[in-house]
Length: 154
Image (cartoon, rainbow, N blue to C red; front, side, top):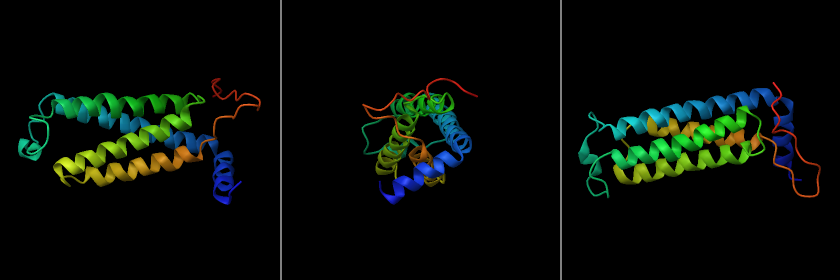
């Protein structure tokens, strides 16, 4: 086992409640942020210049808002629920949510450029999600005894 893998598993075992709480909180906050931003985009994004969309495939912010709401917000919400409920898929769901929001940010920046302090702030949040998700225990491999972490234990 590599030293990094051993260290991350040791750290996660040392403070599992703290790591899950921080990760779940980051994911829940990210979901609320994506839902609010997605709703704002679908509602017309009145204070956001439409000139930013010139050269993009979009005439308005409805479709980007819908993607932000459903894909980004949905993945963050699902991952937050999985983390707080200690489901087996928590690690993978959180890693996927972090990757999804980084993909969203890359496409957004490619289309409209750097326009807000929220872009680097969200990037930092996504990197923290990936870091804390990496610290969660991996799901068991076949041949080992099943992981009972899907059972709610407060």
